[in-house]
Amino acid sequence: MKTNTIMASLSTISGVLTVVIPLIALFLGSVMVVNGELSLGSLIAFNSYTALLFSPWSKVLNIIPLFAQIKVSLKRIEQLKFSSINAANTAGEYKILAQDSAIVLKCENLFPCINGEKLLKVPINISLSQGETLRMVGINGIGKSVLLKCLAQYNLDFFGSIWIKENRKVVYVPQNDFLFEGTVYSNLVMGLKEYDEIQLEKIARLLSFDVDFNKGVTPFRIEISTGQLQKIKIIRALLSNPDILILDETLANIDEASICRLVNYFKETNLTVIIVNHGSLDKFLQPSEYKILELGRG
Image (cartoon, rainbow, N blue to C red; front, side, top):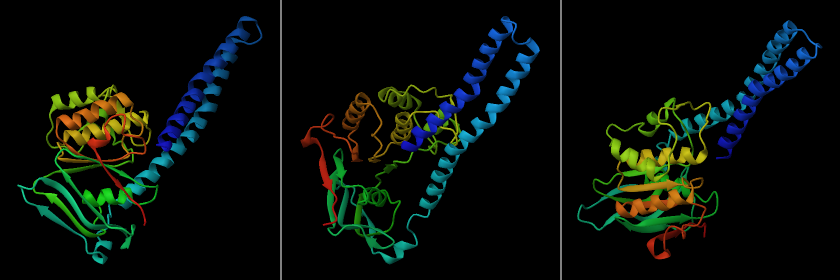
């Protein structure tokens, strides 16, 4: 999140250098021409050299956000390895709950791991029915994201059992913000073979997503706010029609009015939701409307 803010700031500075400063030079030079202190030809030459002078500086400033995006891309490539190699050292398994079960997701004696090492001393035992909301809390670094990836079957490195009801789709929305080369629209529907255009427009209105769908975007130059980036991820996730939605710190920069409407949408669609969010949910949900799982190392 901080990275995107820095990149946006540097892009703004770059724009100021390449546009505003030459204009100032042109204005001052024009005053000098009027006062007879400078010839018109000298002004044109000076203005051209000024533009040439600041253009390389703008490219230097763009190196920093480019480098930041490279780091994000490398991190995502590393995550593609998941834990398939380390999983051989653990005894975790996924199981299927019967179709007539009231429970859609259940964890039994679950220990999320990194390289086969348990992150927690106390096992996790939880169960969720359709339409229930779970808030996961814990200090930074405790392993919340690792646990969420286990539930989404992105991380196979765990001990214990994870039960998921038959034919239930689990969708995980990561905390990392990322854009693919293309348009805003192509990013909203990326990876979806089928989607409902009416539903897309409805969810976009629900979240007050007012970015032009035809706006061109690139992973190397992000000109969209962090809140709008998070909304893109949520819209794409909801378009896939999940039964269980996992939000990994995806609400941090979204306005309260949009979150309120989003939570009401969860209730209306009877969606099972697992949320990691550092802010309070009490503005949007009554304490009786959600469960809390507090992670600790014991």
